[in-house]
Length: 312
Image (tube, rainbow, N blue to C red; front, side, top):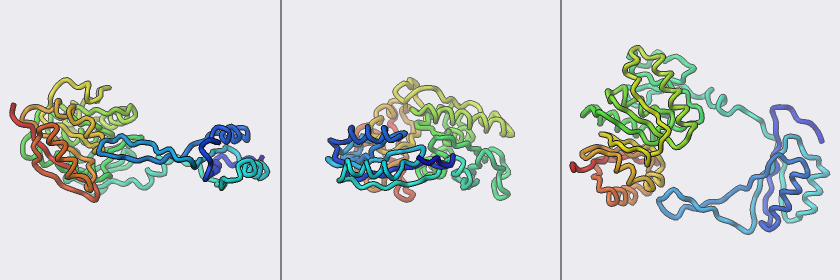
């Protein structure tokens, strides 16, 4: 077996394997020196709940991974033992995908007047001179750097809502990098809590907040954001504004918890709703929670909305 450069690995693409032979086939691959075997799963989502079901087909496709290239003789042996399969050996590059992505991540206007600036760059000349309008982001593995439509939609609604009336408290559900929580704090919300069920997102959010405190001209405009190790069902207090930038299926699952954390008379901002099912989603959400839909807007295939809870 030939050795490979450190920058490469090998993927054996396997099509058309009878499911009843999966265990035997995997055993044969590991005997050949495979590092791992993964099935290309197929999913179906029957309703608005983010609970897709795996579709088990009688014939499946696999990816088999090797650190060194299997010999042609071993591949011929595998093909002869399983004559119905189709196989293709691919050589692929090992990359630090985060570093690759960083190369194309530039500073940009996020939601006027706020700019998002990668932590490893300085604000460009066209960015605002007011340091409170610069949001430094180190993305890590978390969602929500501001490039996605759903995050921009949520930010726009937060900015407009706080432009009408400064709120005392805000809960950011699914905080990701913490960028929406930071916007709220910079706009004067004194008590901001960001929660996320992903430990990596919580770690990233905390690091981003520390980064922005360190670079702020007035750190008081940045401190005061809490990122506790809690999910929405663990939150006991109520907030003036609740923001949830999460896929619509998850919003459906946690709709009662979101409603419970919102004060009477408070406002809720939802983002992450696909436009092709927004009518059904908002009708179901408002019927289940009693919230009133005040406004909705779209960006590409995504929808966001502002809702209000009745005064007690």
